[in-house]
View (cartoon, rainbow, N blue to C red):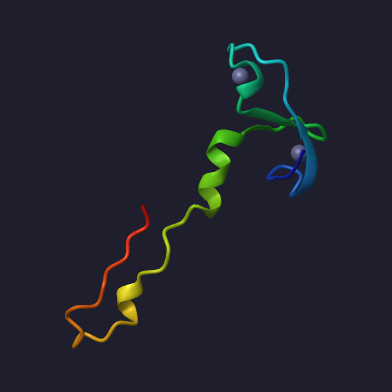
Length: 72
Ligand SMILES: [Zn+2]
Ligand SMILES: [Zn+2]
């Protein structure tokens, strides 16, 4: 699959190396085929898993019953 490689500073083809830790097909380890940079895909989604912007910033302080929605 294509992933942005921090070493190449470009999108590169990443492939799973033969796992030596017994993860099998679920192995989170991917390796850049250009430079050999190892990437743990399991940690990757955290990049765009940032908290949504605080809603109460747009809610006037005079609205005491404004619903507070929290992402589950
Ligand atoms: Zn593994
Ligand atoms: Zn690379």
